[in-house]
Length: 181
Image (cartoon, rainbow, N blue to C red):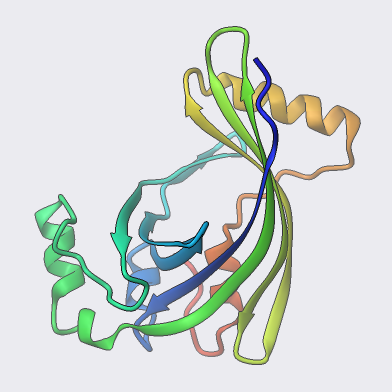
């Protein structure tokens, strides 16, 4: 069964300390408005293998104004986020805003993949960078489907694999923020 593509505008506000403590620990923290609902998301840098990024992603409901780590399940991570060196020093650092057209793909083996086209920009003060990407996200099933779908798209379109996240693009616009480790 084919489902219709969905369209949405996504606005994400990314937070970190002035010294980029979260980035130094391989994390990104955002509040995202999608379909009228705010979600707080904490992502890890994860790892990249054969062009596929695997990241921890923790989504929590939010009111859009308060950063709350009380439901982070990992006690050590929660203690770091709530520490005096981090939580009271978190501030908005950059924003991404983009239009997403997404299509659910049901693969013959039962795997489910979301294919999304994102177009917009990342802004950090007066600095901006474009967002123009095709994103494949495995919702369930075999990760090999991502490689296969990526190869199929590259066969028909002039696409280049990219593992730099939207958060990393924002960090690269911040003056004085150390390089990703």
